[in-house]
Length: 483
Image 1 (cartoon, rainbow, N blue to C red):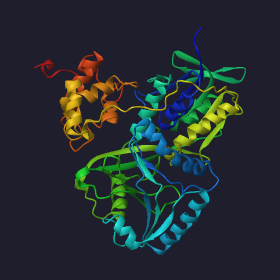
Image 2 (cartoon, rainbow, N blue to C red; image 1 turned 90 degrees about the horizontal axis):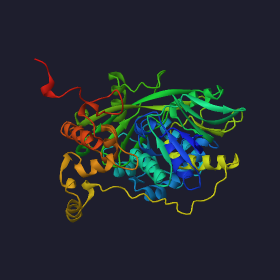
Image 3 (tube, one colour; image 1 turned 90 degrees about the vertical axis):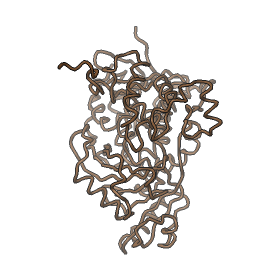
């Protein structure tokens, strides 16, 4: 007889990982599954990394309530998990009379949502805060509670802390069906495997509606909305906070924001598409993003761009988050349509799911040895000379720089490969260490990381992948070429 989990969480994005962590406080057997080769491979890996204050969602919606609630949880959450978080403040910038009216509307909406500290500032105050802002600015809505976070770091840290507290993680495990018994959902099917559980939490991102259809629920659909981004070289990054244009009905607009590591990032545009795997970037889309960003900060120089990418938002058919127990399929908890401000709301969503499970009859007995603290691995680039010397004395691999742009050492890469949620491909190491995230974008480090991965995983270099099966980095050694 196979073991039975109390809860199976489908989807290891930021929402799924925080749900698993929240449940790990209790005496439960928890399983976290994802079809990808690592956690944080869907919407959580490609977004603006902004912790929104909560002035934008319609009052009374799940988005509004959970955005404001989640924002307030970020200081403690990131302190416990050792994650970069900066409450740098955000600005919505007005350039016309209509925009100024929009600021007034957002101010009133934000006050109804309970956002603290909102105020409209003058042109002069805006320019003092961000000297590179377009001088045609008329006014701005300032939100001191807005901030930025490292979304990779948060998701990985939540997963690691969950594992440390007993959660089991299964990657490369795609859910292909649900186990049912007498009308109740009793687990998941993943190819030839099945995992029995008393409850299934569906946090599958853009695929959440497909999980719902496996349970016979077809009243909610998700359309992917693609957004493209630029990342600028840290040395040529002109902003220190978050700048929004006035929002449109479908988007918060193209944003110019700093990141927790000091790069400037701009985007996204908003393109409704059909494919849930289409993360292409296009020349037209990138032009739209750049021109939109330069309207806020005219000095943005495309020659300083080091990376372009695209991400998908899971836009639900109701216009609001869907977080509820499925009445037609008992045992299934749906967490669907988690588009922006999903990252901001994620901590509060996790707590809401715990309460729903309690209401559905899951017995929640606190675990006496639960530890909310996750000690992050050493970040060599942030250490003093004395701290670096001490670290190298304990392990000489910390004295070998592999990524020169971001000052990442072999010791950090090896630690990531053997972490609680192991990094088993190049992108997984990049998300944990920033290796390959700098100006050269992996031009120097990739061969060295490939060698380290092959050595530590005990496999030939031809088996090392970029992001999972089918993305092998090399096909043969140089001297294996036939002449």
